[in-house]
Length: 131
Image (tube, rainbow, N blue to C red):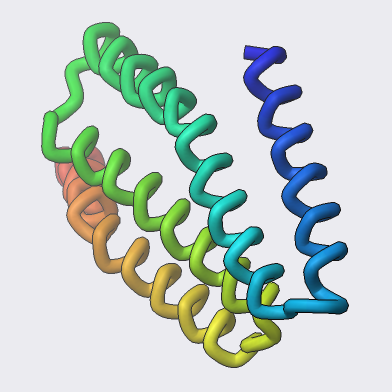
């Protein structure tokens, strides 16, 4: 796991250095290099998602959780990553307003996706209060 993080850090540093070199002469290449680096880092880091998903499923064996809630949590993790990834790319390109809108819509999507969990929690609290 540590070696993977070292690889990711080295790829990031090399990508940034290459983008800096190309930024002065061919600025459009700097953007392409950054995008390629981001995709490569995503590919190297996607294994971490497997660890998270397996841990969530293991937690589910300890406590009786509805599978819909696990599915919602996994969707929220995906939404978070996609929103952060695309927002950072927009910021790197100098489009902060677009990046902020992506972040806002990401947060709203997470909130909307998590509503069934909130409703179930409120229902459980209501059952305790009325019992």
